[in-house]
Image 1: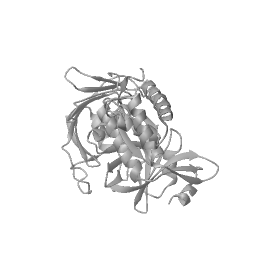
Image 2 (image 1 turned 45 degrees about the horizontal axis):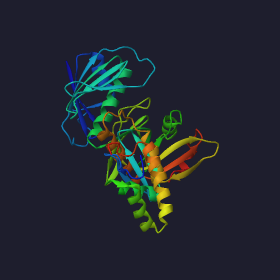
Image 3 (image 1 turned 90 degrees about the horizontal axis):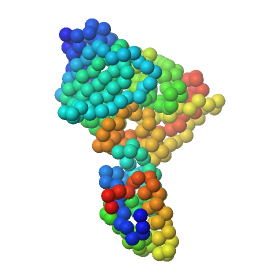
Image 4 (image 1 turned 120 degrees about the horizontal axis):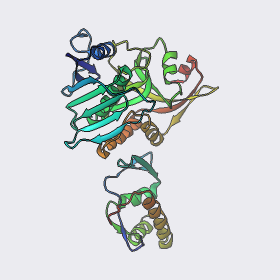
Length: 91
Length: 268
């Protein structure tokens, strides 16, 4: 996967909020993943396909952080989600 | 051929068997429609599921693992050394083959748990449940944590379950029904259901105290207390949603307790 590739969350995942924390339910793998606010927001956006750059631009604007910081956070987070099998592998 | 209509919570299970011991076991542990007509029970919300029960299989081999498969015509199959369940995906008809009464009890729990999740009705939770001042208090925890001990130490309070609690979960409230799936303390059977006021996860300790569990932690901790054998992501998602609804509506606590009845002083 490169930063030019589009990413999207795996179909069938259920994203829900509890006590201000995001919870991602993967019924296929029977796995529950807990995410902080930013992670939850990224997975919420990834209901549609975006490149890392597009995601970083949206986060930089929403959270008023630098593009470099947003890009680094997005790359790291997408890497984790990819390893956990929570992204759509068909893209 | 014995035909018995069992009553469990709001459900009816129409069983047929030609084995005398199976019919006797069912009569001993379940409320039978017609036989126990003097009692008040909730009217069924869904038509009875038909269950044929036969003798067969081999002795329990010590493993609770269940093999899951599907037949060519889409029937769901669950197999353990001592029991075999076949059920159609709409849960109208099922067939059980059981080796002995232990296998029969486990197969009935297995099927009932699948059934109530399929209906989106509720969960069968590994726990004991006690009625205190008109509300149900549920005790759960890992194996050996003291679920049945807590139930015994709660005497003379009435029990709804000592092993597997039948928990009805809706967005308007959560209640617990009298469970026929008992390990040792038999049903008093004049109880029907009771609103659930709290869930206590048991930990043995020298000191007795409770600690509130946040909803997000409660949700995750209750999921592994559910009797369930996942066979389809859509069904698993129903469990996750029911678990979330449960955690949002019912307060969860860790209960640190000794094996005496003083813990009731800490239950609010």
